[in-house]
Image 1 (cartoon, rainbow, N blue to C red):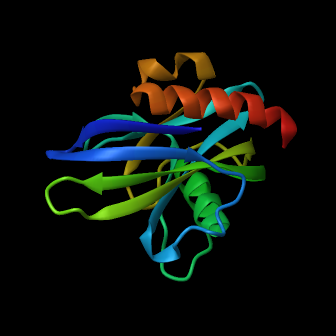
Image 2: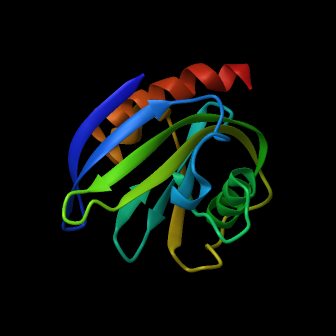
Image 3: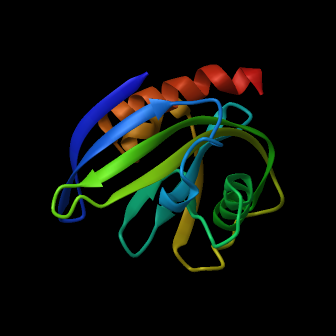
Length: 163
């Protein structure tokens, strides 16, 4: 499935092209900047709150130099929720092209099953200040990514039973 939307991120207008995939290996590593997971603990998903920007989102973040996509996802999910990934699989990727300069980046999306390592206290980087487990059908109360968000959450709900 491919979905294309126009959006504004910060103050920059862009085109977002979302594509389903079962494999991230063919994507250009140098353009892949972030990995986020629709992380299921039992029948709930993790959402995290970024205090400085006052926004809710999925757990995940930036790929550090030399990290694999899986290493990034595991590190970010643990830092932002104090949960460990038990299983995961690619879900899709989105290419964001900024209209002001044509810059393009790719963000990866995965679906995961997780288990708690303990109580969430805080993100070591200080970015995430809250974590909640919610019914996946309620995600729009926290963030609304339009058609792409709807597709990602619904695809994750279908795939989580396969991992």
